[in-house]
Image 1 (cartoon, rainbow, N blue to C red):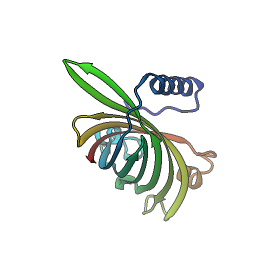
Image 2: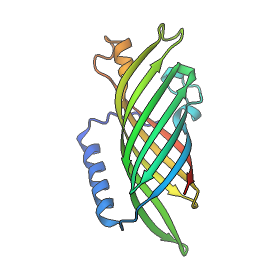
Image 3: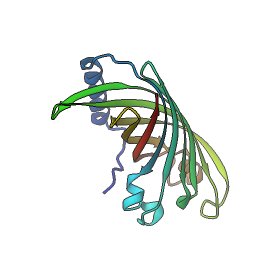
Length: 191
């Protein structure tokens, strides 16, 4: 079952704030500097589908180019979900909190990345009955595991107010519903 929760709950916000604060204060201040390209797949839509796809698996891909300097990440992204005639363009800004652990004599390097993401949502086609663009601003939490100097994998959770749905269906969605998406991403780093 896919995560589809309302982010307005106080407990979720408090938990995330405590987690980020604890990690920020407890970790050494190593600075990251690199460029990267990444590709991600929406885990839920790829495995079990969702209501808009009639619960049939469909491909939803996210592509990003990122620049990291002094633990600040700026990225530009493009998501394409052809099955529901949806795509989005993003510019994200986040901060990298390094997390280190040791297991089996090896150092494990992970990074927690909270970010904010202004977004342009495009909708089109016969199912949508028009072509339209909608501005929104979303938030992300990512956990990146560095497998080597050039390859990392990442879990990314995106919370996006869907202004396209509130505009198209104002009686069903008088306010923009917040939709949660989870992605599995592979990152190629250029040092």
